[in-house]
Length: 64
Image 1 (spheres, helix red, strand yellow):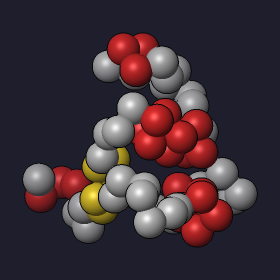
Image 2: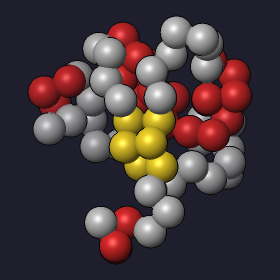
Image 3: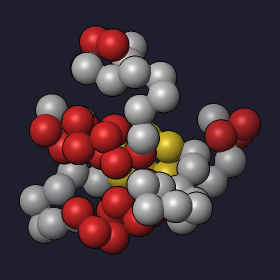
Image 4: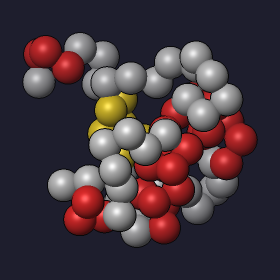
């Protein structure tokens, strides 16, 4: 699936965010920690705009 949208399995959250926004995809994740400068939470704080598509966070991925 990653390759279909131009991502590799080791892509950073920042790259995933940018590809999802460019391709108008909604991200579904179970992880939004703020561990480093490329964490999804940090990327959203820096790059989110009014026209950005949302990120849906699942609290417990094992329950889905």
